Every structure is written in structure tokens, then in C-alpha cells.
Amino acid sequence: MTTQVTHPERLELQPEEEANRYSRQSILRSERMYGEGFQSPGGIEAVEAFCSMLRMREGMKILDIGSGLGGATFYFAERYGANVVGLDFSQEMVDISMERKEEKKLPCVSFQQGDIRTAILPKDTFDLAWTRDCILYIPEKDLVWKNVYASLNTGGQLFITDFCKGKGPLSKSFMTYLGDCHYHLQDLDTYGQTLETAGFQDIRIEDHTKAFIDSLRDELENLTTTSNQFFREFSESDFDYLVNRWDKKIQFCEQGDFLWGLFIAEK
Ligand SMILES: C[S@@+](CC[C@H](N)C(=O)[O-])C[C@H]1O[C@@H](n2cnc3c(N)ncnc32)[C@H](O)[C@@H]1O
Image 1: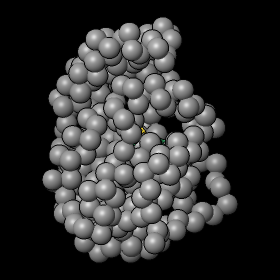
Image 2: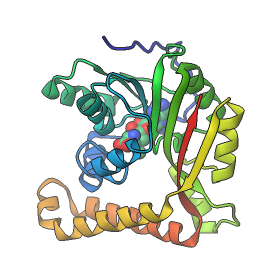
Image 3: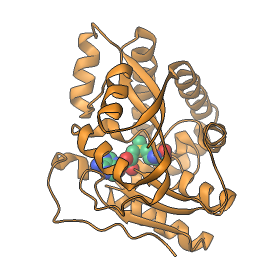
Image 4: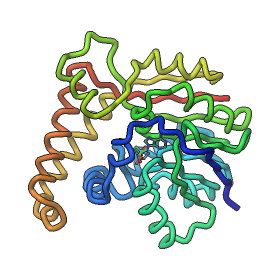
């Protein structure tokens, strides 16, 4: 049985361009960098390592917020027999995840299109709310965490990786980049305070920027060494786009503008 997530009338909180951020081509191009099922660094090895930091158990209920292509969602179901709801704002992500779910035949997984700020989630239900590199897109962090908090069981855990910013002063080029990408980033401490305000306890905050840079470098290297294969599916401008994006992220991280935060908290 899967948990139902219902929605109120759609509120247009996220800018229109967000809805169109992802085309099938751009999603598959990013997946080519990150690894099968992922739109965030580290692939399945990172998911396994993060799970070892959490109280995972057989049959638990998990909400995957911004589930993307469902790499983690499928892992939870296959490894822990978990009952998992993947919620994602992008219909294209949900469509691809559903196609893959059909192939995998996992009845305890469901994917739903929705906005984490406004989705009506079942109360006191999930043992784990998991979100990787998603909340960065959302200006209204308070709406997100209030909603997520209410959906967790007492003692339920929250796991996050997310793009964050340094305490500043931030470079001009990074500020422009944030505007161009429509990213809404907090510094690590402010992120933690926002979680606390929503009611979360035992908040653990870690700076994983070094691991982020290492992953970005590995992904770039893999792209260059397998470029022949890449050009069978993608164009030269796709290649240039990825190299440029990855170089920029590495540069901003090295400058201290851009951080990769990991947060674990409890209800
Ligand atoms: C960088 S991708 C990461 C996907 C996945 N978590 C992973 O690790 O591969 C961010 C995802 O967050 C989703 N997203 C952005 N805003 C959202 C919102 N308000 N509610 C739900 N999902 C959202 C995007 O559609 C996208 O699939």
C-alpha cells in the first residue's frame, strides 16, 4: 500500500521558469554526469553512505522530496523494503520515474507531481523525510519545513543535502550566478536555524563541500574520458554546457562562495 499525497489548488509560488527548468534532454544529460537515477552527486555510493548515518529499518515509510529520477527512492524500496513516496515538482521527472518503476515492478513506490510547499501530506506518517539538492530552488523555506515536520512521525528523521552559500562577502560573479540560476541559498547556520524554527531538534550540520568538489572533478573527468560515448547521445553544445557548469561550481566552491551542506534532524 502506498501513502497518498493530495494537493490543494495549485499555488503559483515557484517562478514559472522553474516548471520548465527540466526537459527530458536536459534531465538525461545531467544523469549522464551524476550516474543512473541521479541528478545529484555521488550516485548510489553516496546514498549508501548517507543511510549509514540514519536509523534505517525494514519496511519504514519514507518521503523523498524532489525525488528526481528516483535513484534514492528505488534504493530505499529495494534495500529496505521501504514504502516510499517520491514527490517532485517537475512532471518530466515524475514521468521518467514512473516509466522506470514499471520496469522495476516495485509496488511500494509511488511518484507524484507536486510542490513540497503546498502538497497536503499525511500527518505523523513518515519515519524519514529525505531530500537531496532540492530546497535550493525554493524561496519559502519556512513553508517547506513546516509541511515536512508535520508529516513526520515523532522521532522521525530528516536528511538533507543542499546547496548553501558562504557567510560572505560573496563574489559579484557568484551573486550573478545565483540570480541566473534562480537559486535561493542560505548559509549553513541560517539553514539550521530555519529547521529549528520549524520545530526540528538535534540538528546536525556538516559542511561537505570538499566531497562535493571531489565528486564534481570525478564527474568531469569521466565525461572527458568517455566523450566518444557521450557524443553518440548528446551534442557538442551539451558537452560545452556541462564542462562550463561543472567548472563554475568548482570555482565557486574553491572561492568559499558555494557550500554543500548536509543536515540531519529529528522531530
Ligand atoms: C537537483 S534535482 C535532485 C533530484 C534528486 N533528489 C537526486 O538526488 O537525484 C532537484 C529536484 O527537485 C525538484 N524540485 C524543485 N522544486 C521543488 C518543489 N517545490 N517541490 C518538489 N520538488 C521540487 C526538481 O524538479 C528536481 O527534480
